[in-house]
Amino acid sequence: MDQRHGTDGQGRGSRCHADISHEAGDRSVAEMIAPASEHVLDWFHVTMRIAVLRQFGQGLENDDEQAGQDLLEGLRKIKWHLWHGNGYRARDEIADLQFDAEALETGYPNMRKFLTTISEFRSDIASNNASLINYGERYRSGERISSAFVEATVNAVISKRFAKKQQMQWSKVGAHLLLQTRTQTFDGSLRSTFRKWYPGMSNDNHEYRETARAA
Image 1 (cartoon, rainbow, N blue to C red):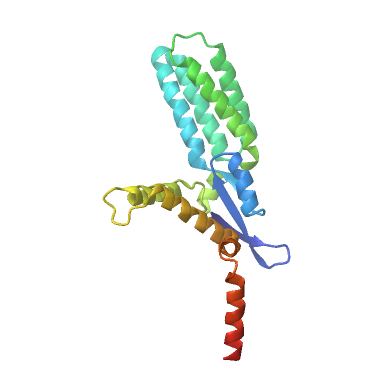
Image 2: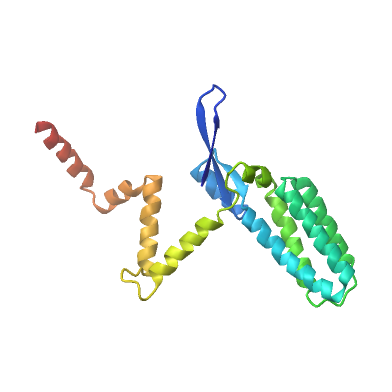
């Protein structure tokens, strides 16, 4: 999670958390954890979607050169608008591209898949409209626009821990329990869980404090 610094209107420094995630559904989770956070659609997620569409465009180019070039040019414009935070123009370009693609008469075998993919991309951008920012400006300011490096690190750690040759190899059950413990540590519910397991825990703490005072 990225942190951006600003002021609270009274000249005092304040922190605004920027949550970078992949889907619109992730926003609700982020809002529960940090209600004041700024939700940002991960730029890596955006570019991967466009990369898939470009593959279709290159395939179409082999079947219909002009149509393929027009499609690729449309994707270039869409990416440019999204990079500069112009979600309105990007959505218009996506809609135009989808309309033109649906009107094409071509023998390209993956055309149906392309139409499905661009329809999903259009819905994705529309549902995440509030999470689109000026990525170029943010990048030039040295702020994060993607959490891909974090995911790569997590995947590397998990892969290593689950490896059979690992001396301290994790089991699925152990990893699940560790995740629950860490989650409850963060949300402050771990102590109450221990109290449910060990009802005498509160009394033990009380006796410890009394002993400490007497000493």
